[in-house]
Length: 191
Image 1 (tube, rainbow, N blue to C red):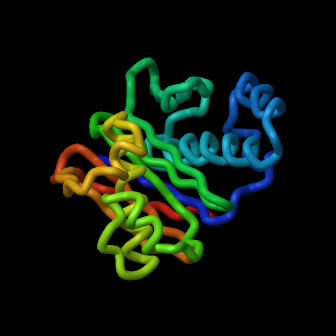
Image 2 (image 1 turned 90 degrees about the horizontal axis):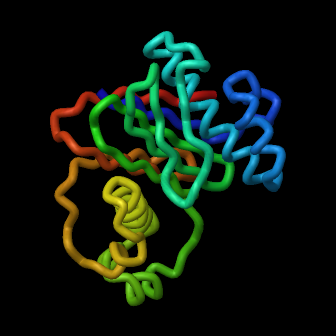
Image 3 (image 1 turned 90 degrees about the vertical axis):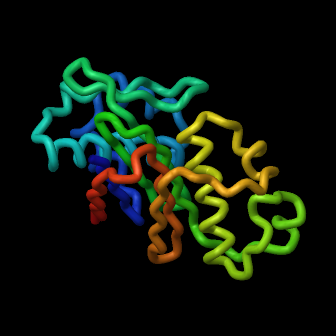
């Protein structure tokens, strides 16, 4: 099972506080306002999603502080899969007990599709912004899924064989990449 949650409007920091550990809250105070809001919203959304579907207390949900690697998650001492993405005022999180995954959300902005396609092979052939952002979010989600550098993926034209799910949202494109084709997916928009 994969739980995918997203919010298209970040909450103020104080509304996230109850879902954060004291260490996370202190860490957030060292960040810029924008980065603190993204950090706090991502972690709050992970915990809210897990509480909603598993009735797990925040104390039992451990997310490591940022390093140069993707965040890791453990619940009651057991490792879980986690991916978090931010763009503008949106945040998306994906969690699974056993399904390796990667998630990306991007705000849809006007782009020079021809220029990007010429520079990055993985984006070539996109005929409109929707196709462009589907390809872009696929590459980013796969980068998080596989650990392969994004620039390497953007310079490749190979079709990715991993299961993926795209959501076209109000002004955003979201892509979830995951390991098992038969995985059940629960999608939850948070207001």
